[in-house]
Image (cartoon, rainbow, N blue to C red; front, side, top):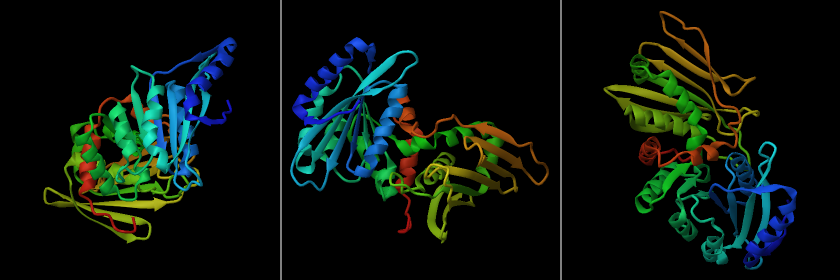
Length: 365
Protein backbone atom coordinates (compact mmCIF):
# COMPACT_ATOMS: atom_id res chain seq x y z
CA UNK A 1 0.00 0.00 0.00
CA UNK A 2 1.45 3.37 -0.97
CA UNK A 3 2.14 6.01 1.68
CA UNK A 4 2.65 9.74 1.84
CA UNK A 5 4.99 11.77 4.00
CA UNK A 6 3.27 13.02 7.14
CA UNK A 7 4.39 14.75 10.37
CA UNK A 8 5.48 12.27 13.05
CA UNK A 9 2.60 13.45 15.27
CA UNK A 10 0.10 11.94 12.81
CA UNK A 11 1.45 8.36 12.82
CA UNK A 12 -1.29 6.90 15.03
CA UNK A 13 -4.13 8.70 13.27
CA UNK A 14 -2.80 7.57 9.88
CA UNK A 15 -2.60 3.95 11.08
CA UNK A 16 -6.21 4.21 12.27
CA UNK A 17 -7.29 5.61 8.91
CA UNK A 18 -5.59 2.75 7.03
CA UNK A 19 -7.09 0.03 9.23
CA UNK A 20 -10.54 1.60 9.12
CA UNK A 21 -10.35 1.35 5.31
CA UNK A 22 -9.31 -2.33 5.51
CA UNK A 23 -11.82 -3.34 8.17
CA UNK A 24 -14.49 -4.48 5.71
CA UNK A 25 -12.06 -6.29 3.40
CA UNK A 26 -11.27 -9.28 5.61
CA UNK A 27 -7.70 -8.20 6.36
CA UNK A 28 -6.08 -9.55 9.52
CA UNK A 29 -3.71 -7.39 11.60
CA UNK A 30 -0.96 -9.32 13.39
CA UNK A 31 2.26 -8.72 15.34
CA UNK A 32 4.34 -11.12 17.40
CA UNK A 33 7.13 -8.62 18.12
CA UNK A 34 8.44 -5.12 17.36
CA UNK A 35 11.15 -4.89 14.71
CA UNK A 36 13.18 -1.65 14.51
CA UNK A 37 15.76 -0.88 11.81
CA UNK A 38 18.23 1.99 11.90
CA UNK A 39 20.36 2.96 8.88
CA UNK A 40 22.23 6.03 7.65
CA UNK A 41 23.40 4.71 4.29
CA UNK A 42 20.65 5.53 1.80
CA UNK A 43 21.85 2.74 -0.52
CA UNK A 44 20.94 0.14 2.12
CA UNK A 45 17.38 1.36 2.66
CA UNK A 46 15.90 -0.87 -0.03
CA UNK A 47 17.95 -3.78 1.31
CA UNK A 48 16.42 -3.41 4.78
CA UNK A 49 12.93 -2.98 3.32
CA UNK A 50 13.36 -6.34 1.60
CA UNK A 51 14.64 -7.90 4.81
CA UNK A 52 11.57 -6.58 6.64
CA UNK A 53 9.33 -8.26 4.06
CA UNK A 54 11.22 -11.55 4.48
CA UNK A 55 10.82 -11.40 8.26
CA UNK A 56 7.07 -10.73 8.33
CA UNK A 57 6.48 -13.62 5.95
CA UNK A 58 7.64 -15.84 8.82
CA UNK A 59 6.84 -13.66 11.82
CA UNK A 60 4.20 -10.92 11.47
CA UNK A 61 5.45 -7.86 13.36
CA UNK A 62 5.23 -4.10 13.66
CA UNK A 63 8.15 -2.72 11.65
CA UNK A 64 9.79 0.67 12.17
CA UNK A 65 12.51 1.80 9.78
CA UNK A 66 14.56 4.83 10.88
CA UNK A 67 16.85 6.51 8.34
CA UNK A 68 19.09 9.54 8.82
CA UNK A 69 19.76 12.18 6.19
CA UNK A 70 23.34 13.42 6.69
CA UNK A 71 23.22 16.11 3.99
CA UNK A 72 19.85 17.87 4.35
CA UNK A 73 18.87 21.24 2.94
CA UNK A 74 16.68 21.81 6.01
CA UNK A 75 15.90 20.12 9.34
CA UNK A 76 12.99 17.69 9.49
CA UNK A 77 11.55 14.58 11.13
CA UNK A 78 8.92 13.07 8.86
CA UNK A 79 7.07 9.78 8.76
CA UNK A 80 5.48 7.41 6.28
CA UNK A 81 2.89 4.87 7.37
CA UNK A 82 1.73 1.84 5.40
CA UNK A 83 1.05 -1.87 5.81
CA UNK A 84 3.01 -4.90 4.59
CA UNK A 85 1.22 -8.00 3.31
CA UNK A 86 2.12 -11.47 4.59
CA UNK A 87 -0.23 -13.48 2.31
CA UNK A 88 -0.58 -16.32 4.80
CA UNK A 89 -2.40 -19.15 3.02
CA UNK A 90 -6.06 -18.18 2.40
CA UNK A 91 -5.95 -15.26 4.82
CA UNK A 92 -4.58 -11.80 4.09
CA UNK A 93 -2.37 -10.92 7.07
CA UNK A 94 -1.02 -7.38 7.23
CA UNK A 95 1.55 -5.68 9.46
CA UNK A 96 2.14 -2.05 10.35
CA UNK A 97 5.12 -0.40 8.66
CA UNK A 98 6.30 2.94 10.07
CA UNK A 99 9.18 4.73 8.37
CA UNK A 100 10.89 7.71 10.00
CA UNK A 101 13.10 10.04 7.97
CA UNK A 102 15.19 12.34 10.11
CA UNK A 103 18.05 14.81 9.83
CA UNK A 104 21.08 14.65 12.11
CA UNK A 105 20.00 17.60 14.21
CA UNK A 106 16.64 15.91 14.93
CA UNK A 107 18.00 12.45 15.84
CA UNK A 108 17.70 13.08 19.58
CA UNK A 109 13.91 13.12 19.15
CA UNK A 110 13.73 9.65 17.59
CA UNK A 111 13.53 7.53 20.79
CA UNK A 112 10.68 9.73 22.10
CA UNK A 113 8.83 9.53 18.76
CA UNK A 114 8.96 5.74 18.44
CA UNK A 115 8.29 4.91 22.09
CA UNK A 116 4.47 5.42 21.91
CA UNK A 117 4.33 3.16 18.83
CA UNK A 118 6.11 0.17 20.36
CA UNK A 119 3.58 -2.57 21.05
CA UNK A 120 3.70 -3.32 24.79
CA UNK A 121 4.46 -6.77 26.21
CA UNK A 122 6.07 -7.90 22.93
CA UNK A 123 9.82 -8.44 22.31
CA UNK A 124 11.75 -5.60 20.69
CA UNK A 125 14.38 -6.54 18.09
CA UNK A 126 16.63 -3.72 16.92
CA UNK A 127 18.67 -4.10 13.73
CA UNK A 128 21.49 -1.55 13.87
CA UNK A 129 22.67 -1.08 10.28
CA UNK A 130 25.65 1.14 11.12
CA UNK A 131 29.13 0.55 12.49
CA UNK A 132 28.89 0.06 16.30
CA UNK A 133 32.48 1.32 16.58
CA UNK A 134 31.08 4.82 16.05
CA UNK A 135 29.28 6.05 19.15
CA UNK A 136 25.69 7.06 18.49
CA UNK A 137 23.26 8.28 21.18
CA UNK A 138 20.29 6.68 19.39
CA UNK A 139 21.98 3.29 19.61
CA UNK A 140 22.34 3.62 23.37
CA UNK A 141 18.71 4.63 23.77
CA UNK A 142 17.47 1.75 21.63
CA UNK A 143 19.61 -0.69 23.61
CA UNK A 144 17.69 0.25 26.73
CA UNK A 145 14.45 -0.86 25.07
CA UNK A 146 15.76 -3.85 23.11
CA UNK A 147 15.29 -7.53 23.79
CA UNK A 148 17.98 -8.20 21.19
CA UNK A 149 20.40 -5.89 19.35
CA UNK A 150 21.29 -7.27 15.92
CA UNK A 151 24.35 -5.81 14.22
CA UNK A 152 25.79 -6.36 10.75
CA UNK A 153 29.57 -6.63 10.44
CA UNK A 154 29.11 -5.66 6.77
CA UNK A 155 28.85 -2.09 8.11
CA UNK A 156 32.43 -1.97 9.42
CA UNK A 157 35.81 -1.58 7.76
CA UNK A 158 37.70 -2.75 10.86
CA UNK A 159 36.72 -6.21 12.13
CA UNK A 160 38.97 -6.28 15.24
CA UNK A 161 37.58 -2.90 16.32
CA UNK A 162 34.04 -4.13 15.55
CA UNK A 163 34.62 -7.19 17.76
CA UNK A 164 35.98 -5.05 20.59
CA UNK A 165 33.00 -2.68 20.32
CA UNK A 166 30.50 -5.54 20.62
CA UNK A 167 32.37 -7.13 23.52
CA UNK A 168 32.27 -3.79 25.34
CA UNK A 169 28.55 -3.40 24.63
CA UNK A 170 27.87 -6.85 26.06
CA UNK A 171 29.40 -5.71 29.35
CA UNK A 172 27.35 -2.51 29.41
CA UNK A 173 23.89 -3.47 28.16
CA UNK A 174 21.48 -6.14 29.33
CA UNK A 175 20.06 -7.16 25.94
CA UNK A 176 21.22 -10.06 23.78
CA UNK A 177 23.69 -9.43 20.96
CA UNK A 178 23.60 -10.93 17.43
CA UNK A 179 25.23 -10.43 14.03
CA UNK A 180 23.73 -10.96 10.57
CA UNK A 181 27.00 -12.25 9.08
CA UNK A 182 27.23 -14.84 11.86
CA UNK A 183 23.78 -16.08 10.82
CA UNK A 184 24.68 -16.01 7.12
CA UNK A 185 27.28 -18.76 7.60
CA UNK A 186 25.22 -20.88 10.00
CA UNK A 187 24.66 -23.60 7.37
CA UNK A 188 28.41 -24.15 7.08
CA UNK A 189 28.73 -24.47 10.85
CA UNK A 190 25.95 -27.06 10.79
CA UNK A 191 27.71 -28.92 7.99
CA UNK A 192 30.99 -29.19 9.92
CA UNK A 193 29.21 -30.11 13.15
CA UNK A 194 27.47 -32.97 11.30
CA UNK A 195 30.61 -34.11 9.46
CA UNK A 196 33.00 -34.04 12.41
CA UNK A 197 30.65 -35.16 15.17
CA UNK A 198 32.45 -38.43 15.98
CA UNK A 199 35.68 -38.55 18.00
CA UNK A 200 37.60 -40.04 15.07
CA UNK A 201 36.41 -37.41 12.61
CA UNK A 202 37.05 -34.61 15.12
CA UNK A 203 40.58 -35.91 15.67
CA UNK A 204 41.15 -35.69 11.90
CA UNK A 205 39.95 -32.10 11.85
CA UNK A 206 42.18 -31.22 14.80
CA UNK A 207 45.07 -32.65 12.79
CA UNK A 208 44.50 -30.25 9.86
CA UNK A 209 47.59 -28.57 8.44
CA UNK A 210 46.02 -26.48 5.66
CA UNK A 211 42.53 -25.10 5.10
CA UNK A 212 41.41 -23.25 1.99
CA UNK A 213 38.14 -21.31 1.95
CA UNK A 214 36.91 -19.83 -1.34
CA UNK A 215 34.31 -17.06 -1.29
CA UNK A 216 32.49 -14.85 -3.77
CA UNK A 217 34.33 -11.55 -4.08
CA UNK A 218 31.79 -9.77 -6.32
CA UNK A 219 30.41 -6.66 -4.63
CA UNK A 220 27.11 -4.78 -4.76
CA UNK A 221 25.91 -1.48 -3.35
CA UNK A 222 24.71 -3.43 -0.30
CA UNK A 223 27.74 -5.71 0.23
CA UNK A 224 31.34 -4.59 -0.20
CA UNK A 225 33.16 -6.43 2.63
CA UNK A 226 32.92 -9.81 0.97
CA UNK A 227 35.67 -11.52 2.99
CA UNK A 228 33.84 -11.36 6.33
CA UNK A 229 31.93 -14.67 6.20
CA UNK A 230 35.14 -16.51 5.30
CA UNK A 231 36.95 -14.75 8.16
CA UNK A 232 34.11 -15.73 10.49
CA UNK A 233 34.14 -19.38 9.45
CA UNK A 234 37.88 -19.87 9.92
CA UNK A 235 37.78 -17.81 13.14
CA UNK A 236 35.01 -19.99 14.53
CA UNK A 237 37.02 -23.14 13.72
CA UNK A 238 40.19 -21.69 15.24
CA UNK A 239 38.40 -20.62 18.40
CA UNK A 240 36.63 -23.95 18.92
CA UNK A 241 39.78 -25.98 18.23
CA UNK A 242 42.03 -23.83 20.41
CA UNK A 243 44.37 -22.58 17.69
CA UNK A 244 46.61 -19.63 18.53
CA UNK A 245 46.67 -16.85 15.97
CA UNK A 246 50.15 -15.79 14.79
CA UNK A 247 49.93 -13.60 11.71
CA UNK A 248 47.95 -12.65 8.63
CA UNK A 249 49.24 -11.47 5.26
CA UNK A 250 48.29 -11.19 1.60
CA UNK A 251 50.39 -13.72 -0.27
CA UNK A 252 48.67 -13.08 -3.62
CA UNK A 253 46.30 -10.36 -4.87
CA UNK A 254 43.30 -12.62 -4.23
CA UNK A 255 44.61 -14.76 -1.34
CA UNK A 256 44.74 -13.91 2.36
CA UNK A 257 46.98 -16.24 4.39
CA UNK A 258 46.54 -16.79 8.14
CA UNK A 259 49.00 -18.68 10.32
CA UNK A 260 48.03 -20.54 13.52
CA UNK A 261 49.85 -22.80 15.95
CA UNK A 262 48.75 -25.53 18.35
CA UNK A 263 50.54 -28.39 20.14
CA UNK A 264 53.88 -27.68 18.45
CA UNK A 265 52.51 -27.67 14.93
CA UNK A 266 51.45 -25.04 12.41
CA UNK A 267 48.17 -24.55 10.57
CA UNK A 268 47.82 -22.44 7.43
CA UNK A 269 44.46 -21.01 6.43
CA UNK A 270 44.04 -19.58 2.93
CA UNK A 271 41.10 -17.35 2.09
CA UNK A 272 40.73 -17.22 -1.68
CA UNK A 273 38.59 -14.57 -3.41
CA UNK A 274 36.85 -15.69 -6.61
CA UNK A 275 34.08 -14.14 -8.71
CA UNK A 276 30.69 -15.89 -9.06
CA UNK A 277 28.01 -13.71 -10.63
CA UNK A 278 25.15 -16.07 -9.69
CA UNK A 279 25.92 -16.13 -5.96
CA UNK A 280 25.29 -13.59 -3.22
CA UNK A 281 28.38 -11.44 -2.40
CA UNK A 282 30.51 -12.97 0.33
CA UNK A 283 28.98 -16.43 -0.09
CA UNK A 284 31.33 -19.25 0.90
CA UNK A 285 31.77 -21.43 -2.18
CA UNK A 286 34.08 -24.22 -1.02
CA UNK A 287 36.17 -25.40 1.91
CA UNK A 288 39.10 -27.85 1.71
CA UNK A 289 40.98 -29.44 4.62
CA UNK A 290 44.24 -31.37 4.35
CA UNK A 291 45.61 -33.12 7.47
CA UNK A 292 49.14 -34.10 8.45
CA UNK A 293 48.32 -37.64 7.32
CA UNK A 294 47.30 -36.29 3.89
CA UNK A 295 43.62 -36.93 4.52
CA UNK A 296 41.55 -34.61 2.33
CA UNK A 297 38.09 -33.22 3.11
CA UNK A 298 36.46 -31.25 0.30
CA UNK A 299 33.15 -29.36 0.54
CA UNK A 300 32.02 -27.50 -2.59
CA UNK A 301 28.76 -25.95 -3.78
CA UNK A 302 27.19 -27.55 -6.81
CA UNK A 303 27.29 -24.82 -9.52
CA UNK A 304 23.90 -25.90 -10.90
CA UNK A 305 22.25 -26.28 -7.47
CA UNK A 306 24.05 -23.89 -5.08
CA UNK A 307 22.31 -25.13 -1.94
CA UNK A 308 23.72 -28.64 -2.55
CA UNK A 309 27.19 -29.18 -1.10
CA UNK A 310 29.28 -31.96 -2.64
CA UNK A 311 31.38 -33.72 0.00
CA UNK A 312 34.48 -35.75 -0.90
CA UNK A 313 36.65 -37.44 1.73
CA UNK A 314 39.83 -39.31 0.84
CA UNK A 315 43.20 -40.47 2.19
CA UNK A 316 46.29 -42.10 0.64
CA UNK A 317 44.70 -45.49 1.40
CA UNK A 318 41.06 -45.01 0.45
CA UNK A 319 38.48 -42.73 -1.14
CA UNK A 320 34.94 -42.57 0.26
CA UNK A 321 31.91 -42.32 -1.97
CA UNK A 322 30.91 -38.69 -2.62
CA UNK A 323 27.92 -37.49 -0.61
CA UNK A 324 25.73 -34.40 -0.51
CA UNK A 325 24.74 -32.03 2.26
CA UNK A 326 21.70 -29.91 1.42
CA UNK A 327 21.37 -26.41 2.78
CA UNK A 328 17.79 -25.14 3.28
CA UNK A 329 16.46 -23.33 0.24
CA UNK A 330 15.92 -19.59 0.36
CA UNK A 331 19.15 -18.77 2.22
CA UNK A 332 19.04 -15.25 0.86
CA UNK A 333 17.33 -12.81 3.18
CA UNK A 334 16.86 -15.38 5.97
CA UNK A 335 19.80 -14.39 8.19
CA UNK A 336 17.71 -11.98 10.27
CA UNK A 337 14.91 -14.54 10.57
CA UNK A 338 17.44 -17.01 11.98
CA UNK A 339 18.77 -14.54 14.53
CA UNK A 340 15.25 -13.68 15.71
CA UNK A 341 14.52 -17.38 16.31
CA UNK A 342 17.34 -17.73 18.82
CA UNK A 343 17.40 -16.72 22.45
CA UNK A 344 20.44 -15.38 24.26
CA UNK A 345 23.87 -14.52 22.91
CA UNK A 346 25.73 -17.41 21.27
CA UNK A 347 28.78 -18.48 23.28
CA UNK A 348 30.43 -19.57 20.01
CA UNK A 349 29.88 -16.06 18.65
CA UNK A 350 31.40 -14.53 21.79
CA UNK A 351 34.43 -16.81 21.34
CA UNK A 352 34.68 -15.59 17.74
CA UNK A 353 34.58 -11.94 18.84
CA UNK A 354 37.35 -12.59 21.36
CA UNK A 355 39.36 -14.26 18.62
CA UNK A 356 38.83 -11.44 16.10
CA UNK A 357 39.64 -8.71 18.62
CA UNK A 358 43.23 -10.01 18.85
CA UNK A 359 43.86 -10.27 15.11
CA UNK A 360 45.92 -7.79 13.13
CA UNK A 361 44.52 -7.34 9.62
CA UNK A 362 46.64 -6.11 6.71
CA UNK A 363 45.73 -2.56 5.70
CA UNK A 364 44.44 -3.64 2.28
CA UNK A 365 41.77 -5.94 3.80
